[in-house]
Amino acid sequence: MSPPWDAECDAAGLKCPLPVLRARRALAFLPPGAVLRLCATDPMAAIDVPHFCAEAGHALLAADPPEFLIRKGGG
Image (cartoon, rainbow, N blue to C red; front, side, top):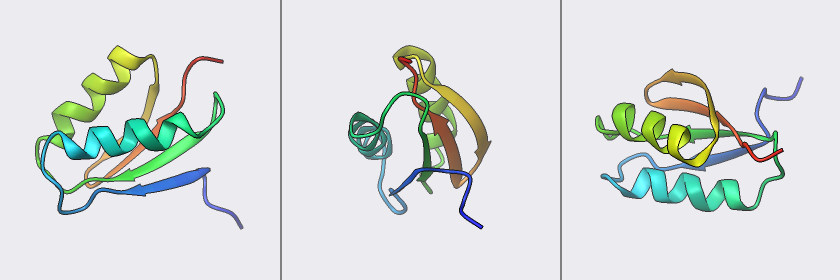
């Protein structure tokens, strides 16, 4: 069985703003509607990732730090 995401981005151990920048870069290579699994251990990611999604038009499907599932918008 395949995972419920299309791509993964490991930002564990990176501090703000690097997890969001890595997620932005990973999402740029995905088609609209694709799901990205982001692993971010920085405590600020719980604030930064939802804000990034809202600003960029992506859907935050799950936020259970350190895991975030983001559906790419624009489609």
